[in-house]
Length: 116
Image (cartoon, rainbow, N blue to C red; front, side, top):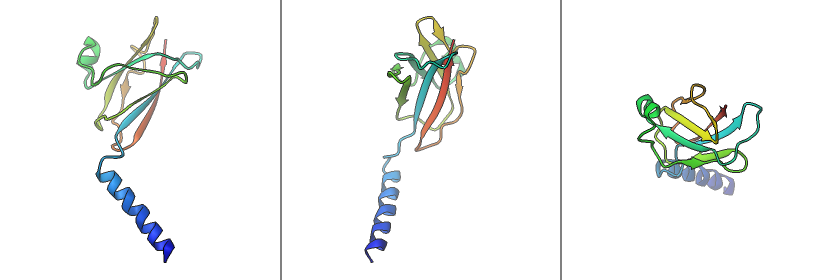
């Protein structure tokens, strides 16, 4: 009896959490250089469309910066594709991996980006 109640409670919690927005669509970006070294304090910007990306205007959020492990988590995103601009010192990802395919809703999506 207790096992059934526990299973029911677990699934009820998951259902309520999903409908209440506890599982936000987010993107974890890992930034590294061409040698595979993780890049701390790299500036990451996301754009809704290619025109804004090319003109470097209207990012979807304020700039985010990678931590000591080269990672940054960007939260509260719409489940759509994005253009991503990453810069650190003289390195960037322009002309390389600058497009992120449609994010899966309610999940932490992950992408690795190399800057040159």
